Amino acid sequence: MEAAENQFLNTEFIAPVLPQGQVRVRIAGVICTLQVKGNPKPGWAFLKPLSFDQAEICGKPGLRQIKSYLEIFPAVRLILLTRGRHYQMAWPAYSSDSRFDSKKAVRVLLAESVEPFCQIIARFDGAQFWFQKTDRQRNPSVAAHLRASLAKAVKPADLRKATLTKEEREAYTRVFEAMAAARRDVGETRLSHALAHSGAHLASYIEREDVYTVSFEIDGYHHRSTVRKDDLTVLSAGICLDGQDRRFDLNSLVGVIREGRRSGKLYEE
Image (cartoon, rainbow, N blue to C red):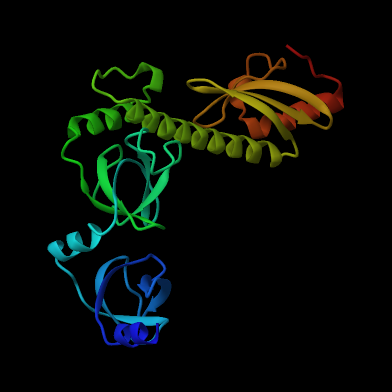
């Protein structure tokens, strides 16, 4: 172990720099994490150890050197899903690959220039998946079709492309559902804020193409109104406003309902 440590301190090595500015190396079977000096960007680098917990960048490797490094590790084919800050999430391209959990999305590092739904080849070092290249065995028109379908909000069940694999459909479904959930979260936040501003409480809502039907509580009383999605203008107040519903938005409607109850002039529709 001592001999391996001494040899390591006198050796330059190639490694991928992690987003936290760290690199991991194996010394005599023991994995060590080193902090890279400065503020390095994630990517491939030649490094020189300064100690057993610090290193500095001393050069940039070429494509052939990166390829040689990656080919030490087993290859896995993945379908890219969504992009994070320093990584992309991916879905296994072959559910029959027993080496990995076929029902679990994984993070792929250094996949900077590849678009969602592309099939790629990554390498797994036992802890991380590293992008190597796009998989030329898969026609790129498939990924393009899925991206276009997602932009049009095509439901997973309505996908119509004969060459889609089961795994590609699963990948599309995960992204579609995640985007739908994100839109619901945004909608709920907008409605809650609009009601809370006037002292009301959101109970539930139903989202349709251009409108929200909102159930809410004011001073212990329940009300139901329909508002436009884009600006929360009232379409149907749920109370009689003599056809003046659209003069109000959800926020101002709360004040109208509260005043109506206080004055005894509130008429439910």
